[in-house]
Image (tube, rainbow, N blue to C red; front, side, top):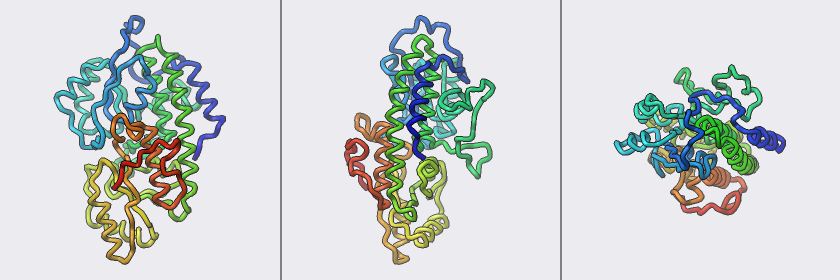
Length: 351
């Protein structure tokens, strides 16, 4: 569950050695790296990726994002301007594992042009980094961290950021990738990553301890779609989603009735809506339980596939997860401060 203190020390030490010592698993460094012009431009697809890329790149790059606040990346179709922006960027980072399924063609075209394009979640284990077992050069990709999809052989749940330790791996993978692209600044990327990872260790510990205050029988998280399985595995919460992994899937009446039965049988007191997904199915659960004589409340609005507004605390990865953990804990009857880890939550995201 929580990361032990000695792990964080080792992690920071590994990164401070310099990610240039690690062997990347995709694009080689450009020959012109020694005459790099700063700041170069990095394009990203989602807010979660954008935020951690900014943390690692620092002032070496201008980081621009495609998919904005409250927009579902599962359904997002790139515009002509988006494609032009991707092509103009020097480096592209996207989340991967088919999260941005409708952007696949655009990303493939950029990659075939020779521009460095990195799928962050698909690199969290392929490149030697935070896990000593991955320092073998013959490791292409360690899939042990990724959650498999039962109905889709060989595919994985893309919502890795819901487990802070998973997104720490993503930070490390980004540091490796940027060092491949710009070897001259590898020590800077390593330092930036190490400093940011220290804050994520604290966040992970906060979430772990907050969720532990929820009575064990109440640790059941029901949301609009199946985006919280990494969160559930990491922090000991049983997770149920009305829709599947992708919001393209439709939730039928049978699924909703099954969840109403589950809610009544388990005496679930709260369900949660998501900022980037319609609340109609969650409302149907509440109404269905009411017809069965059970009062179920909306426990709050969670960030799933998109963060909060740019320029706000909730518009950062740290704020997104702080908000989710605090809202879930309080909604399920646990004890967490109303304004979160460092008192920064605005409380503006209400149902």
